[in-house]
Image (cartoon, rainbow, N blue to C red; front, side, top):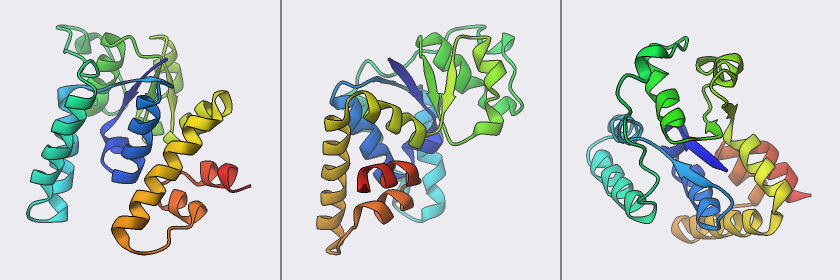
Length: 180
């Protein structure tokens, strides 16, 4: 399965680490465009000086880890597409150009299911997406989540109980599932 990752799911570090870790485990093929990565880099500017430099370093590492994930722009494709927010049409165009099966995003209202269905695509929020992957192959998802949680615990020097950790990462249902 191919999944286009919207900028809003790449920007939070924990969520990105879980999504890319599961991709490294072979559960899906990630896709993005240069414009999506640029949106991520610009979004972190509000965090203060140096944040953009860190983000660009993370983007370079992501590009190196997944060189085939970058979807080139297909001329004229975006012109025939419509979404409620015209600024998101490039995401839909990248998903189509990359042959994605799903767009992983928090922006449900900007990606109406009927518009995506016309293009053979689905929209899933990251919690739903990761729970679906976990249902098919639980061990890699659980391993990746635990690795990311343990790394966050090490870096913070504080205990990171799984369920609250995943809730902060906007993965509350996955947290509940993995905590039972």
